[in-house]
Length: 431
Image 1 (cartoon, rainbow, N blue to C red):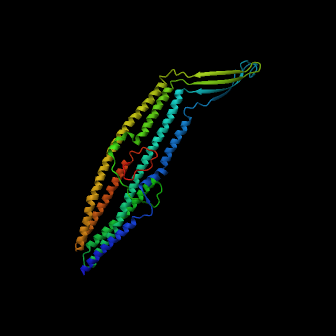
Image 2: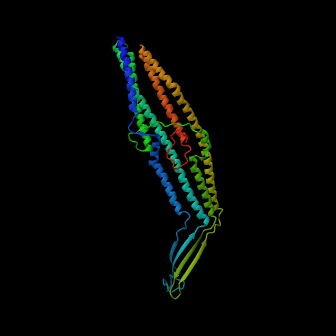
Image 3: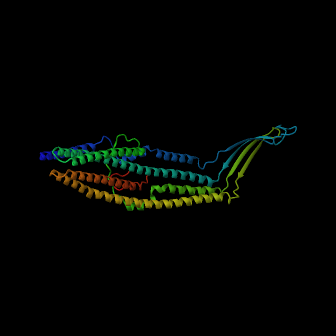
């Protein structure tokens, strides 16, 4: 009787493993797949942050149209030399110089001022465009990290669901042994292991929903899509990344700010050169006296440069020095961040390879050995222990794969200089 029950439990395990293969195949065919590249494209296409950066470029471009133009002319209308006392009070014909006057005045800023104003406007456009490129780079990175987290959470859930049937088969096998006169301890352990697995499934479902919500923050609505397979992760070219450090996208806004500060210096220095204005006026007098025409030229006299223009020039130069210092500091930070990212990649890559070539094969071999011993009449508890250890190893390997992908993504976006580049290289070639 015991032999027949043992054969029954072994048969149940065989059926469970066959069903597991069918279930895994079904789980691998979702209706709609969203790749990493597609998620990034959606984020670039629908990002309000990029819309805001584009609007700032448009604003700077519109302001450039007015830069360096002549000021609007001034119209003046007046009554001059009108008596207000005596018998001739308010009599327009009593006084020879009484006139109704209308005139136009045009101010002419110095050529240096107008040139500096245009250069300043051009620099504002450069700053806005550089900020847009940085926004795009940051958006690619955060979207990639969110997609990787979503992919990892989904794969974890699939892994836990795939294991439910083998665990259920172990429960059935243990109960069959109890029915055949075996002890109940193994059956209770099997039930507890299944309940623990199901709780982890529920936790994993919540993790998937949370990861998907974080991805929609960047990519917008992704519906009921499932993450596509993780792309090839080529090893980063460390030498190239170090060599191109000074051309990094993150430095472009500070370099554009340097140009803006430099144009501010020229604009402040241009105030040393005098502006001038021209006024033309027509005076209408009594016909007995005849009308008048006036022409007036005015010139600014920057006589107090030490207390007016010079302090503004010094302030602009100090601002440029501050930007220069910020650029040096940012270069140091990027160098340190690059070395840290390369170290994270090496560590994560080595850890992932260890799991793939050592931990997982050993864990699978331990499960097979425990199942073989069980088929020969061994203890079911050993199978449960081997299953539990194998599950933990697979989950740890998945964490290592996620960390490896995150470390790769942090390096894959460092040499993105082109504003039109909206995707990343997923072909396996070095970017």
